[in-house]
Image 1 (cartoon, rainbow, N blue to C red):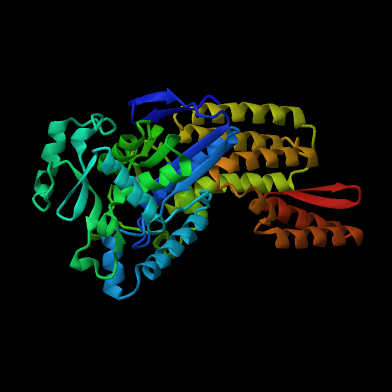
Image 2: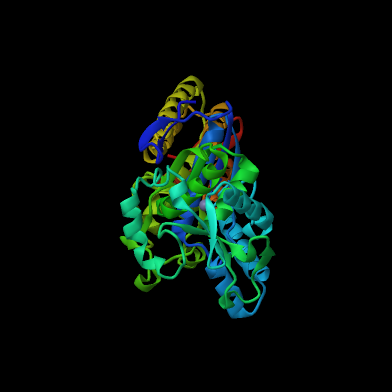
Length: 469
Ligand SMILES: [Zn+2]
């Protein structure tokens, strides 16, 4: 594999080499399950899905873990406001999250560990950090002592001064030794109501950053290949994950850190007050098909700010329509003899596709390679070079590309009849009946009607087949 990825840790496009050849362990920070995730969240998950799919396309076996943050200020507030248990409250949003994942055809990670089911792992991690001098108690909470971790700021490329400026305001609330220190364990407060754990660390709950360190350590080990997330998580979340895990193990948490840029919606940062805040469900109500949402959200390079236009449905449909029309052409194409040329084109386009994806996931160019094949196949259909054998070969090639893209609907298209198929079949039958009764005028009239619709008919071995020009 020749994949190269931009590594936030090194600020370079580095060759991607997994620890074990042919196997990749990856972790994505999952959703906080207190509301329906918005399409910006899903773009981040779609990028992880794209990475996973492409790693598999390149012959790797991937083990992918995505956590579910089912305990934090927002989930507690939501559950307590409704007077239901945290579990009942978060179950609702976890179900919604999985429904949306399925709609967007995001492949399932191998594991979705819930924070609340890993409290003992988190507690023992904090105990160990205390033992190593990285953590201290203050104000009934436990904090990470940043000055004990010399590499702090490495991922975010922030120096000690910058860190102090950024956190000065928030520091007033806490009895921390240093403004930069962050909570590993938060002591129970009245607002938490019935949500707390009685542990050796006291009565309280884990800090958000701790969840990811504890769960990635448990399921992916002390050091794994790839950690993904949105750019907004670089600091402080990912920086703190590094301090926690590496403070404990002395080994690099992940060798490659891949961050995707923000999604802009209608030209601006998504916010409820701007009215450009959309969930997958919102877009479906506006007439978007899930497949179209996937196509639109994947557009652009993962490291550039992508703009999603909620009213761009027609152009998205036109883009996908180019592929769908090709699939219909393939189904109705008659002829043959194009096998060698087709196989050459497929090999060429696959090479273009891989070269683009290997180049730090240049998705726009990879997609262009697939649409180049669409054009090639259309040309071969027009030249009547596509018979049954070629049809199978072309279909298989598109299916393979779709194992990465996830929106081509190669098999779906196979079942998608030509929208006018019934009408055309009836006309073809009428023409044949007219010919049988030697009513040549009528036969010619129907043939002209078909020609007007762009339909070509051929009589072969007593059977009439039709196709679009
Ligand atoms: Zn995380």
